[in-house]
Image: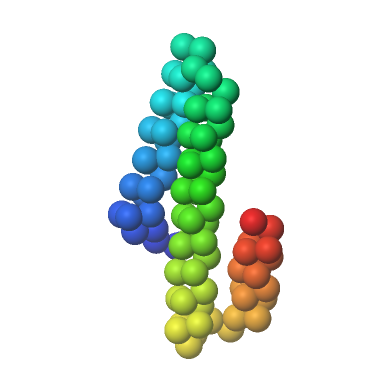
Length: 84
């Protein structure tokens, strides 16, 4: 099972807080451009988190000498990166 470090979890918590704030903006009728700007910031933050998680996973994969299906896992990681 993959362990996610505190920084990764904190990034996700921050994004959750931002989304809650955006919902409040929408409920109070804030301008479209302001809402979209905040949504773009959250998307960027999540994209960075995805990259960090995939990078950490790849690093572990490449350094772990006991992993027997490295090629398959490497292909999965590449698909995750391309999917982005």
